[in-house]
Length: 416
Image (cartoon, rainbow, N blue to C red):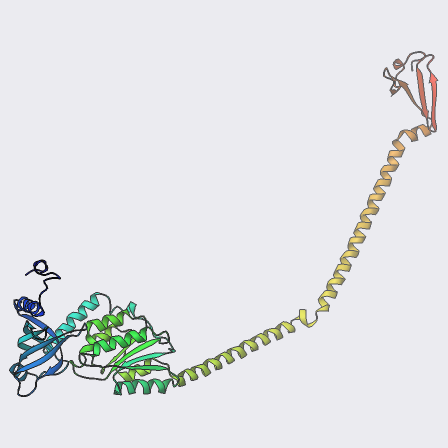
């Protein structure tokens, strides 16, 4: 019967009673076929004297579970015996209990998942996560040198918790470690660890998160190869350190974490520096700085002594005085050279002046000669050089050594 048909057959005035709805749901569920289902056993109820055993089957990667019923003989005959946290595969058919209105799976076959199958599934998941790049070295972050806060996810009062705390505080007594205790095996381990990881990752005072657990069997370490937990660690914003089991144990969490430690003890040593080593390193660096500074000062002092011992600094006035004497000597030589040049030039000028005086018209006129000038047509005075230049009555200017006289031409007489 479809939902549309059921809606047409009922109404607010003519509703179905609960028994009818329950019966129709039971009829529809009972028509479903049997299926193979895989999960983790979280609760086993097999009371003596009863013919039916009750199990709770949980999906380890999600918060989903279902009730399973089966004949008591299936639980008693399965090898190895069922226990909480065991991985199983069941062949079951959905069943609806009319009186309680609940659904469960009625199992007719239960198979425990063997170690080989578990390892094969882990290997398939490893290849998948590796192909997605979750194991890539370039995505791994370096741990802070000295974290201001450390988050530790581990079992309550476990040896792993003691090893991390003891070694971390032995190396750095002031280390602040916030411990979150969770289940570290079984069906509740993954949800609790993921919740603790989320809380610590959102805390701004936590710089690094350590997930630690002691050694155990393959089944005990299964939660640390869970896909959901691996993806949660890969998505965390805070660097995560994996310290699971012993050296040979390598759950998938070791590959996803930013740092893999062989043991919880190793994690306690690697998340914080050694205060003794760092103190010794500080003293060493301080000594090196002191020696370097003293060496530099000594070198500069030697350079200053060398500079002070040079002649120019040993007798700073001597070169100046010598240069002053040189300057005075050169100035005297220049003065003598200038005076000699001036005397020579003055003598040359006097000689030229005497020659010019002797050859000039004044000297000639002093000996009795005159210069006769006549006016041309424009009235300008011209030197008379020929009798043909003047006519009778031409005014003349006769220049003598001490002045000039004026005359008028009367006659002219050619020379012999």
